[in-house]
Image: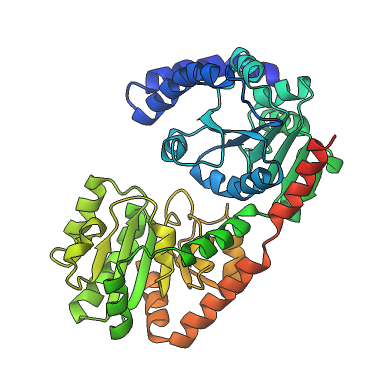
Amino acid sequence: MLFLYNLVLPVLLAAARVMAWFNPKVARGLAGRRAATVELRDHYSKPAIGNPRLLCHVASYGELEQAKPVISELRRSYPNIHIHLTFFSPSGYENVVGKYEEVDVISYLPLDLRADVSSFLDLTKPDLVLFARYDVWPNFAAELARRKTPTILFSATASNSSRRMLPLVSGLLRRTYSGLTKLLTISEADKAVFTRMGVPAEKIAAAGDTRFDQVVTRKERVARAEGVLPDGIVTDLQEKGTLVFVMGSAWPEDEAIIRASIQQSIERGDNILAIVVPHEPTDANVRDLLADYPQKAIRFSELSNYQRQPIIIVDSIGKLFGLYRYADIAMIGGGFGAGVHNVLEASVWGVPVIVGPNHRKSQEVQRLIDSLAAFEVGNAKEFDFAFWQLVVSEDLRSGTGEKGQRFVEAQCGATHRIMNEITSVLST
């Protein structure tokens, strides 16, 4: 299977180079990998490289959130450790490079060509490689196994999708995952999928999801820090008893679902503030949202001129988690597109959440729904019903939110279990 993969891979890379002429994200990824070679040679030529050397790979920013608790604990437990963080996605890399200080160097992972992988590992010489969630590449895993470099995939998840079980795909995945030293899955259900895939059962253990640890830690840190909203606005909201609704990580499909309900609320003059946080807060997207609510919305960056507009449109990144602390109700975006975004960031604050139907890849969403800590809606009419049920009933809001918060707190502890596995590897 690896042989066929390596026959097809150069063709796919050639197609990516053509695509780069039309897709800026692909172009940035290819250019970033070329630049990384020079930068890493300079970095690893310096004598003060720590010991041991750890390589931690994440696909993008969301997977970094899963890796952060582990990285922080590694830094605390091994002060001299050298941590190299790699990304596959340009968006993840660009949002973190130069900003995340718990690691020693950040770069792209090389493309999965055998020569590129070999050169990269000759240069970096990791003593241990960690993968967060799923992004394990066949040639990279095979070369690490050949070099007998210990490898751990943590917070791992797998689905029983038909594509994964196709003979060629399942064969390649089985070889790739079987070459790892340890697979630490989110749940027993994930463990069962990897076992059915053919991965040796003795290599797999259910250890939980580090995202629960991360959101609890972030909540504690944010609760101690200065608030995202100006104090004057927060005081005004509290004095007037204004209900705050946060639409987090909104895509156009999500915005269309909530639009009629929000416009009706504005027309009635309800005591509700809606804060809309686009998944991609580009100027064009923000202008489109402002046009949906003429004279009734204000940019977050212009809150110094706030005159109790009923809608705030967030026009920068990094604000969403801190905004959930003010929310009475939240809708989490992505559920009407590629997949719902992180519901835990709202639930940890005790906020009742509403999600769209596309959440099958997020086990925690279904568990929240099953425990009556979240509501699934399939269209604008269903959103309107759920939203107003929560608006009019403080008991429903508080009860739903409390269930969500208890659920998050009860799932903590994955970082400790993962660190036990890492410590056993580093101590050998």
